[in-house]
Image (cartoon, rainbow, N blue to C red; front, side, top):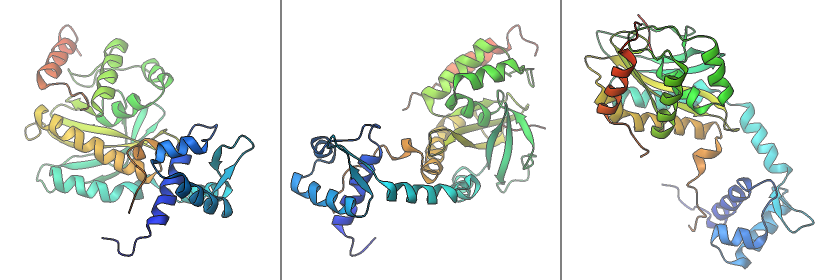
Length: 290
């Protein structure tokens, strides 16, 4: 617990964040009062202090915007960002909580490259290697990032070809687009034995300060000890962990719940996923990780 916390400082920083999240046109005093839920006189005092230090500027239209000092802090923060360093503590916690191997990946064109990996203590382990590449369309890491990316990324993935890797691999554009819609609705992706026979994974995307894809986290395990139900239960925890890392990278969406201080997703059921699996494998002939 923080002692001797300055309420004025906390209010000032919260006010700065409200201005930072505003549209490019800035905010008038009445808008700030509504957003902050604070007394007008308090806001004016805080704004005056922020303007003196150039964290906030007031334009000719009486709108408040971020000033150069705020930009200097942001640039200093972003210059020191390393997604691996930002994710390592979260990855260790996920291993402890899930008892399974956790991967950190990023996109390299339409493939996933493994940036980091923390093994769980099991006699049967995942045989992934840091620096190795896997297809984005068949892995939980890749599908999570494709779902978070722009349409042209999906188009490029489809254009590169989607050969079958297991009998359950998604290999058609229509099926991949439907799958990515489900990923967006749930907030996490599942590789249901689609990249390697006998291996199931669940993953979620990490976003940077511009809302762009910075990477993804996944938990991978042999299917005999990691059921589809297990993956669905773990999915929200993976999504929360990815958002935690995103917050460290300055992702705007990771701070949406911040308020002015004074002192299911929809999840598909296992039955629905099995129905999708049956559709994929019917009429489609169709050691890797997701």
